[in-house]
Length: 109
Image 1 (cartoon, rainbow, N blue to C red):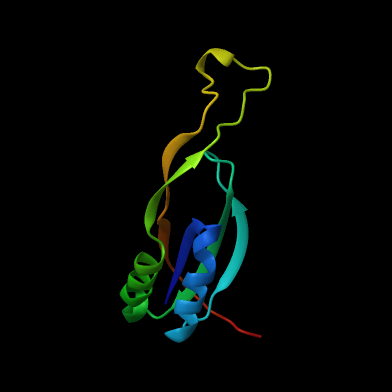
Image 2 (image 1 turned 30 degrees about the vertical axis):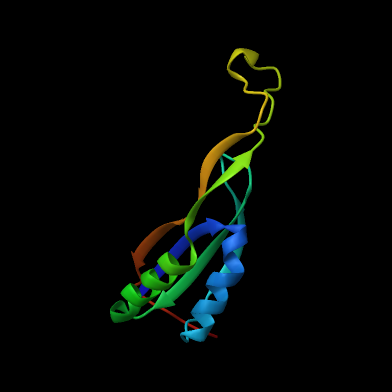
């Protein structure tokens, strides 16, 4: 058995959860936040059999695509303002960071 942990952008979470349910996978959704953009993320945990891991990875890849977005940088508070960019910049967002971990035991009570 494996535990698949996917950290995704909030805007992709509903699509991903619906796709997982449609294919018969159970998951747990946790709210999280990213360090770089200071924006909300969602962490999805999926427990599955070893032979179904690739199917889960394919679903995640299909639902969580990279895209470009304009963001307004947060001004530095008490820091060096020399590197502050006062106008929106285009950054790549989306996609998924995925960890696959072995599970020794699984219990459901």
